[in-house]
Length: 193
Image (cartoon, rainbow, N blue to C red):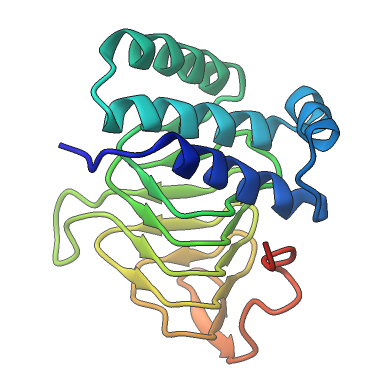
């Protein structure tokens, strides 16, 4: 069973997600992004549904999980509820994402469109990725299997990642190879919540 979550924790997580978009957390900004930013809509419904999952509120969980599923269908996105997502998630474009239900995503990560964070069911890396803090995941990235992505990592567009990536690495290519150790600085903004 999930660890119980307090309402103030839920509000804090929603505020950290909102703050990532333009460094504001007021109600007017909340309403604006609720109406126009699909990535924020997705993270908001995920947070609320996860809150009710963690607290065993089955009727409310069913309602928000259904809303989350509808939004996922509209966006051709697959985001499963047990996924562990840290604070300050930034989903720039929510279309075409597929995130395994058992993946772990750290704090202050950026996820672009057409990203797959998937499970390997055979071979030496059976399992799902564990992604560190302040990781930039570019458009079209595919991460498969029981791999560890370190902190402050930048993964370039259309990279296929099947091996562990150390802290501060910049990787790209098919298969992904380390290009430098300049990290994700400049890609991850508004983390001073």
